[in-house]
Image (cartoon, rainbow, N blue to C red; front, side):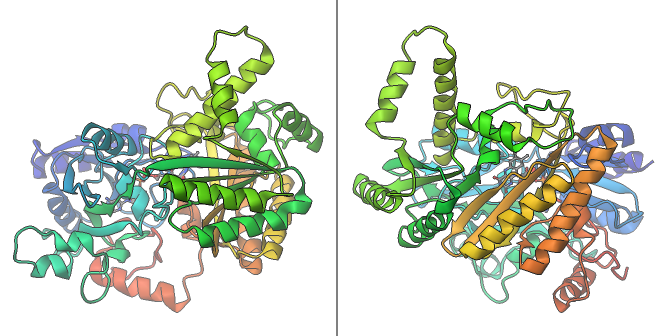
Length: 545
Ligand SMILES: Cc1cc2nc3c(=O)[nH]c(=O)nc-3n(C[C@H](O)[C@H](O)[C@H](O)COP(=O)(O)OP(=O)(O)OC[C@H]3O[C@@H](n4cnc5c(N)ncnc54)[C@H](O)[C@@H]3O)c2cc1C
């Protein structure tokens, strides 16, 4: 058995080995497929075994699937369809070393197991005036793997791979797999400090660090990232846009704010009414029902929670003068657009103060208290304090588990059904209008709720995230969800809506004929001639080996 071979070959002080049953039980759940069968898992306790494991995989012909936290909910952590060889999960979550590269400069070096919560606690405990690059996936997710997925987050360092200055890795080539890959700058630096590499992203010669993101070309064992400083002042803003007729103005406001206040304003989210309802209400059809809310249900829930047709949410970071100037700009531009709320306004402070008093338990106060609590969680996350505010979304159609945010949530282990449609959309009103119609036509055909969020990463770049939420236990619902995503992806390409990230199934449905993917294939064949590292992850599967 593979687990026995691994137990014999690897130093048992440096690893824990799981057999097929335990490995499948621990890592096999996804939010969109039946449980995966995993032949074995190696939990790494010491980085030095990574190279040895690659040697064994080359020698005994099995495949390695690295994970840092294994919580790629909605996308999947393992591309298993592309190889018939035995499959070994390489779990790096116990590698939790945090090295202070330079506290003053905000440079920090992390092993793959460091989660958002670990980093947040480290920064707080050691008084670092910097923010953790948090995401909606919450406290238990690794910083390294999110950057490798080219995920994005909420603090001003929105683009997580862009904030990676340096990394170390192991490539799968049988002759080089036991020597740690480092950049040319690291190799040339004789000072023994290896500091300068960690300050300069591009290195020297071809930029190779990038090939380790969204790929299967190496196992990253350490990463240095540039943190965003905690601002002297901070304020979040919420603009309720009551009518769709104002949508073009909302887009203009977002674009101009991001262009003029780059670095001061983080990413801006624009959410539609249905999405807001899904965040603030229980599913009125019950979680087991595979049906969308009627327009009437949406309007009713929106009315009782005072939700607008569109809501803009953003954050301002800077000293008090900068924050005030930005607020002034937003207020002026939002005139005629809708109602603007700032988190530091006197009104908000007053409401918070009143709600902290021992008032009677009447419904309106309870609702208001809940809303203020969500606002506070929203503010916390914008300041780099991880929380689970976004995770209940995954449970919208989960008939078994109610998301209790007081414990650590895990949508895959809780049996949630979730897929993401995450295309980039041209920053043009006509394209965005087109996209809204497109999603609102296709999703309901499959009884999938069309929930729209536009995340404006830059003034010229919008990523839409449409969560496809379904009951994973219901086979028809599961099939409908996959068909819905298929149609969204394929039909969307015709309009120029191109995904920035794909789930493990979709990764193999791509057309690999273009020269881009043929280049990936050539690189893969030369770095991994035996095709042992995560075959098929963002790469053609028909590798010569
Ligand atoms: C409600 C909700 C909200 C979410 N919000 C966000 C969000 O705001 N932003 C966002 O980006 N995502 C979001 N996600 C998606 C996802 O859960 C996160 O991106 C999560 O961080 C990815 O999982 P992970 O970090 O555990 O990666 P893993 O599952 O550990 O890894 C992901 C992939 O990277 C590869 N990999 C991991 N570590 C290494 C390594 N050391 N070397 C080489 N390859 C490696 C793995 O092989 C795997 O295929 C959200 C999900 C949900 C359910």
